[in-house]
Length: 297
Image 1 (cartoon, helix red, strand yellow):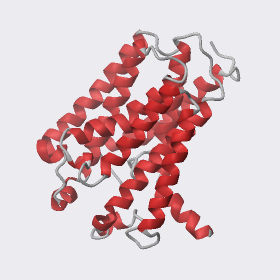
Image 2 (tube, one colour):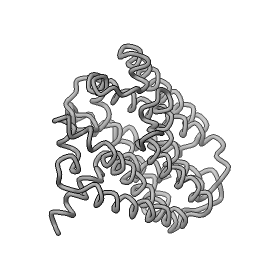
Image 3 (cartoon, helix red, strand yellow):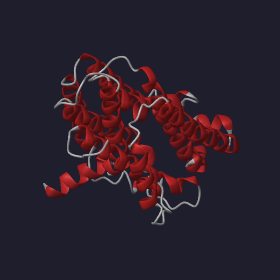
């Protein structure tokens, strides 16, 4: 029983998505309350858990559907418990259904708009990997769907719990969307040769490796620009700048040579972990302040 639980935890691949899911959902809610008369309440908790489960579903269903292909690749087999024969497709499928339903129920606790956004995330997560549709194997569409389900919709789902007029909050949504696109291009460049052999028809195959690297760089620059504009429009409290500076100083004291997927890198992948750590530190300081546990401002 214990070993089966460990297998399911590994299948969830929580380490790859929880570090960005938490700050995105919470930031969405904090921006909404910062721009309206609303205050944070208990609804943030179920909606946050719902988003984590939605990401668990996205990664799980991907491994279920890709298991036969991953079984032919020694590298990918190591991260897919189904390809390793540790879990049957039927068992994994039942878990996926349970996670999908549980996530939808929790999204409903945040209200109608939260449920609509959450169901969109869940359905996109399925279509991203599902045979026939398989969005991840369609150029351009693969990046757009990735951006929506792994960033923009996460932030929006937290926001609409407290406000439906996004206003200047769009600059943050655009910023995290470009950051997500950067991440997708980074992964496609990293997997370029493997995907080419597998015959995967994604955006990197359409653009070529060199142009995909250029697209990745452009997205990184646009991310910074969007966040600068958001700061100018005071989407974030001014005092968060001090927290950001301190967080950047702290993470700069350590060496980072592993990207979010755990692969060694000497490229822009080195900034992935410190950026996420910084985002989490800033987010939770803001959260503590908003609920009255931090006397700053």
